[in-house]
Length: 524
Image (cartoon, rainbow, N blue to C red):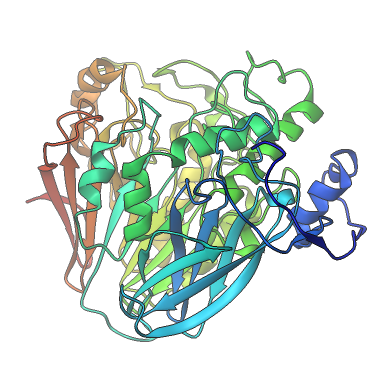
C-alpha cells in the first residue's frame, strides 16, 4: 500500500510494561509486539476514518472453538496480503472492526453485534469471542470496517451441557501443502453439512528460509488466499492444533532439527518459534487463552458436545523430548524409547488429559492429536522398524496412556491423527508384542488434504507386520467424515481424484465403525 491512503489519527500513544515468559525470553524480543501479543492492547494510534483502495478481507473469514452459548469469529485486514513487511498493506494504526451475528443469512434478525480493535501488533487480525447464543443453533456472521463489508460466514454452536444430542458429524483434516492453493478436499468438504472441522496440524508448510514474523505471516496469508480453504472456513467452525510444519519440520520443544541454521542457537530457534506461534494465532479462529506469550502457547484444550462427545485437543510438539533418531520412514527401534524420563505430551498436559478422560460425562472421548499413535512396523521380517517422530519413539508415554485407558475405562476413546499423509484405521493395543493383546481404543488417521506420500510403498510393504492395522491408503488425498451417535462412531474416508481437481466429487474409499462399548475398528 502506498502513502496516498487517507488516514485520520486520534488518541495518544501508550506504553505498558510486561512480564517475561517461563524461559525469560520475552525481554529480548521487542516490547511493543510482545506486550500486545500478551495483553491485547496496542501502542498504535487509532485510524478514525479507514478507507481502502481495495478489499481488506482478502483472507476470508472463519469461526472456531464452539461452545453451547458462543463462538469465536476471525478475520484479518489485509488489502495487500503479500506485502513484504508482513503487514498486509495496512498502515500502523488501530482500526475498529464491527461484527454482526444473525439467525439468517440475510441478517434480518441480528442477535449479537459488537466491535473489536484490529491492531498492527497482531497484523490487524480480529478474534471476536461471541457469547449469549443458543446451543445447537445455526448462525451467520459478517464483519464491517469503514465502508467495506466481509463475505457472510456460517457457524454452529455446540449442544447444551448435559443434553443428549442424537449425533455430531465433523470433518477430520490435516497436512495441506500449498501445491498451487486449490484444495479439492476442501472444495468437496464445503458441500457437506458438518457441525465442525477438526484440523490436527500441518496447516501450513514452512519454507527453509522462514524465520522472521513477516515470513510466517506471509506464508499463512498465501495459504489463506485459497478459495477452497476460505469456503470451508466460511461454512464450518474449525477446531485447530498445530503439528511441526507450522514451525519447522520435526521440531521438539525448544530443539530445532539438526540441519536447520538455528539448530546450534537455542535462542534463535525460540525466536523463530515465537514468530511462528504469533502468525499461527493471527490467522486462525482461536480464543484468548490460546494467544501466545513469546515462544509459549497453551493450545491443548477440550470441547464438550453435550453428553455425546468430548474433544480432547492435544499439543504433542511443544513439550516433547527430542527425537532419538531421524531414520525415515522407519528405522530400528532405539532402546531409549523405554526411558521413563522421555515424554511426548509433557507431564502437565498428560495429567490434564487423564483428568479430562476420568471426569468425562461423554459417551465418546475423542482425542484429537498429531502423529500416529499405533505402532507401525516397516520391516515385514523379524526386525522392528519404526518412526521415532511418532508415538513409536515415545513408547513409555504411549504405555502410560493405554494403561490408564485399560484401568480407568473412560467411555469409548477414539484417537484422531494426521501427519503421515496416509489414511489408517488402527486398533490400539495394550501390548504390540502380543497380537492377541487387549484392544483399548481405536485410531483413525486421516489422509492429507494435499501433501504427497513419497513413502507410500514402504507403508504397503509393512502392512503384513501390523495385524492391528485394519486399513491403509497412502495413495489418495482427501478428508475423513466422522459421525458419533449413542450407538457408534463412524469414519468415512473420502478421497479425491487429485489434490488440485476442481470438478470431480470426493468418493468414499472405505468406512469403519466402532460400536459403543467395543473398542476396535470394524469395516462397513
